Length: 67
Image (cartoon, rainbow, N blue to C red):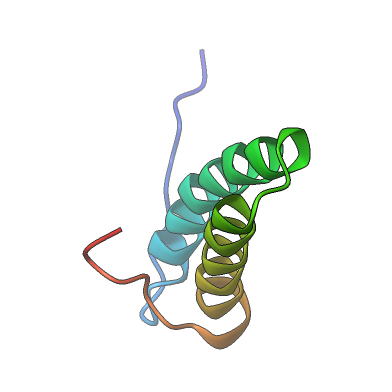
């Protein structure tokens, strides 16, 4: 039986990948809510989540702690 092994890189890549997975789930939830009910409030929430995800994945910026 094989175990799961995580390799942490000096630049924190493994942590960013884990954070990206968690944010991807949040982004999917917000997108589904916006797709089902296209209000300005849902649009703002979707765009905010999309920006946070892009900052994390593309710009290596951690998400705000308040999220």
